[in-house]
Image 1: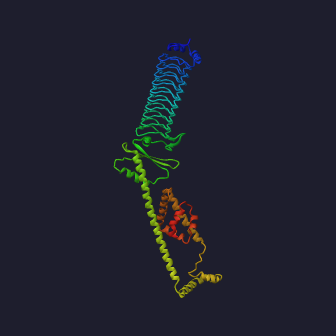
Image 2: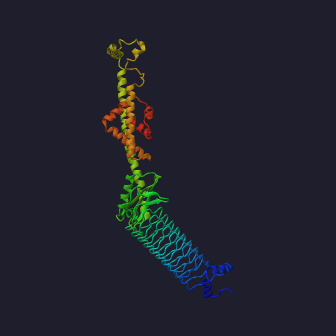
Image 3: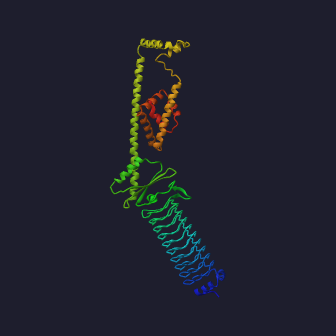
Length: 498
């Protein structure tokens, strides 16, 4: 005869696990009602209790290890100090149940409802609570080392003093949870939502904080942390070497105000940024801005996090900073273009001077034949002692003594040496300025070229060397000697010296 009342079911359970499991195997569709049952100290490990109604039952100190409680109703049940290690509680309802001091080591609680449950002092080491509902759960001092809490909802839960060493909290919701003095060493907080969460005096050493979400209400006061990782699998360690100074973690990660994240994907002009920053502060006198942190990622993307007053409008501040930065970039670009134009005007002036000198020489050459002959005679008189022992060069040799000779000789060893030295000096200048100024944008490249020209102009010895080295030298020759990406821009500016 099948049991009818909860007392009948309890009597059947007292006959032992084997008897109970055999009956359950023959009656899989029956959902026994054991609510309000008293089974304190029961030893029913491995019992098949799936779907059983144990709501408000007293099973304190009972041994339910390895029991099958999938889908069971344990709401408001009294299970303090009960043994539930390796028990299967998938989808079980444990709302407001009392499991203080219970042993849940390696228990399976995937998707279980633990809303407002009492688990203070319980041992949930290596238990699986992924996707579980732990809203308002009391986990004070609970042991959760190595526990899987990925995707769990811990909103408003009390985890004060809990041991979460190596716990997996990936994607978990810790909104408004109390985690003061919790030990999160080596825990995975990737994409964890920790808005308005209290982490006062919590331990964060070796934790992974990749893409975690915090806000100005998240309390990181007096957090204990030597180092953290910004990516999973212990990648992107911060600090890169050594450990954080006392309070440094809080200073870096605490969000005391609302924040604006400015992202620069193609480099940054610091002059334009600081001008925009100051303009935003001075806009109405009410914007209190603080540069909270800078993150330079391996792919070259720079993120500047700026804290603003809690009463400020984050969107308006972000739009103003971006708009003002662009305006400053345009102003700086215009200024440098003006400077380049001035340089090019200097080049034109030098060219005009050279043209005037050429015209003077041409006019001298066009004087009377008698003057030219006199000059040739004087030239012969000067060089005859030097050429008296040389072979007769005939008519062509005499023509080369004329000032009007237009045949350019090949580069001499001295000319080659001067040209090589000049190219070396210019390349060294470019390399030095490369280390001081960025060259990512056309504007930045123009700035480096201007600096090269200014240094040549301000150094008379260097200028004389450059002028002498570039005499009658085609641009292509110099281009081949200087190995630098800015050589084409520089050669255009160096035409005045050629």
